[in-house]
Image (cartoon, rainbow, N blue to C red; front, top):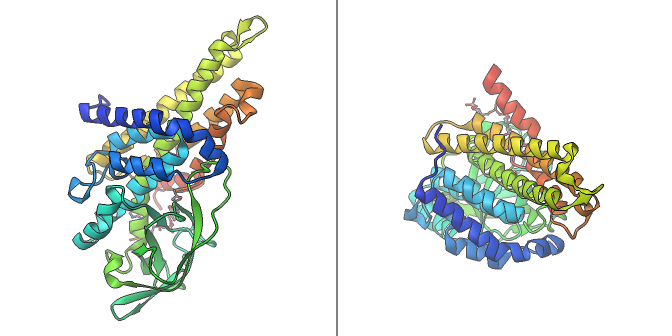
Length: 380
Ligand code: CAA
């Protein structure tokens, strides 16, 4: 597999790197502390095309490939994982879902403002009783003439507190199975829609997360993506792309923690020598470098398969699993290399350590990724 990047891929990576250094780095620590959603920098990301990176230019997107997306996601997440997840959800869960499964009218109405960064999107699958067991949803849609009337409650919706459009999965029969589910685009300004309080999170604190409540919420049938009954498969195939995004986010967090550790190992002295001259630290740095490189190769491999139009479910799960475990390994070791400094909020490795944790949970836990991979290997 050839990972020589094209001029366009390098251009996208450099654009994301420069933007992250100029606009995100100065606020990253402060928004982690306050938990404030970074409206201004997210708006600027939209203006630069980063919120519609992989969407078609016909609908306001940048038209980049998945490899460019991985490179850009890593650069943004290296500086701030909250911006990383906002970018990932918008690109791979929302825009992609609408572009792949939406009608021409839906692409004009929803994708164009989303891909051009004028609107914020969210993806809502999880419910209080169903996280990993995603098909077990209870939020119900009942057809009423040319409308659906929706009642229920969704949870852990990333960007839910700020989203204009939410790709939402509902069931037409709460006693049924995944064949009763469908996907709709929820418009946040219609009556019957409420947002819960923002979740107080351990990490990625500047990304906003909440529950959503639907009480006799009415939308036209024209807001349905694809067919009735197709929702669960859409959710799964959209998550395949999402998992490449989270793998790239994890990679960015790991890379940041690794670079901080290398710099600290070179500068900090103990027993009259730099700590990087001790084998204990050298081996930690070696393991970090090795795992990051392997995670990057897995993530790029999944992206290349996606760009070729091949099925990439297993590759995306492998990338997400390995990169997220790597992010947790590397940030843990980075705290260890930094000693007391690594435990202080005055140093960013403490933030990387907290931010890494979610990458093994959302968009399918590590246990779910192992299920997906083992089913591909063994069948069933
Ligand atoms: N693409 C297309 N179709 C797929 C698919 C995929 N990747 N995976 C499964 N399907 C299809 C299957 O082929 C099957 O189709 P048939 O009925 O025709 O046979 C159907 O979907 C049901 O599949 P399963 O029997 O495998 O379903 P399951 O109930 O056993 O669940 C699972 C499988 C992998 C465990 C799935 O439930 C899963 O991925 N769970 C994790 C949920 C998750 O990732 N949630 C994340 C929430 S979003 C989020 O986190 C965003 C954020 O905040 C940033």
